[in-house]
Length: 295
Ligand code: A3P
Image (cartoon, rainbow, N blue to C red):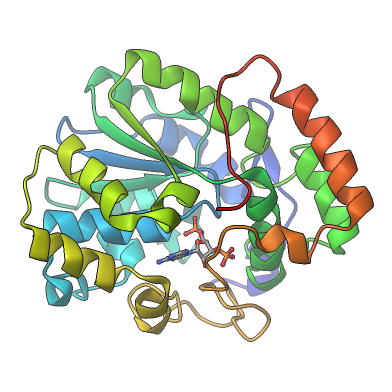
């Protein structure tokens, strides 16, 4: 890695009003000209919405429920993070260019920043959304340990920044609404973290149908088992423990932290909840997109 201080904990920079990791912005021309292929499957999320979980599920479906095949490499090698370009550490665009088809591609970009080639190639996409409050809590803990993002400060300070969209990838509200609208004219399967928690087999079946696959019941059961929180927490290819401690310090907060719906209740004060709800009503007015904050 290059000199840590020049790479880590730097302030976010902007692309079209969306705050992003500084070197993604510096290398934006590479991201913008990314060459999608027609058989790419894009997995898109706002950060901390279950990206790793759904990525593992899709890789398991692609490999007909063979858990050993899915342990061939870390999740971020099997499902590269397209726009992530970190000097001396990673370049998702270059990584994907070398990858044979069919590729699984991860992104956190808001819909308006997705490279054109995905639309031109009519790529299938899965969007996973998670309720705003649990994302805020998960993102706060992630930013405490993930040195790629600025220091989150106190929870009190963070929740303000999050509501204002002054965090990596910008506004949660704009992100979930933008992708929700886009699904009207593009093959996007829009799924919810809370639904997967409630009934994983039902949701995995939706993914399977969307991918045009037909897996036996026993294979579906194996996928449910292998992708449970407990299994993924212990799995070195999914728990991010292969990432060096100076980038992600899991002694501060583990990547596989709690994996539940409703943890926000342990963090929001009554006053914070009221302020958040009022602001939420304003920002989500006019959309029929509904979230569950507990199951
Ligand atoms: P918490 O911090 O609330 O525990 P992403 O992969 O988008 O970064 O999302 C990370 C969040 O998804 C974390 O949430 C993590 O624990 C949760 N997660 C990862 N794998 C999971 C699984 N198999 N079941 C439930 N939640 C999972």
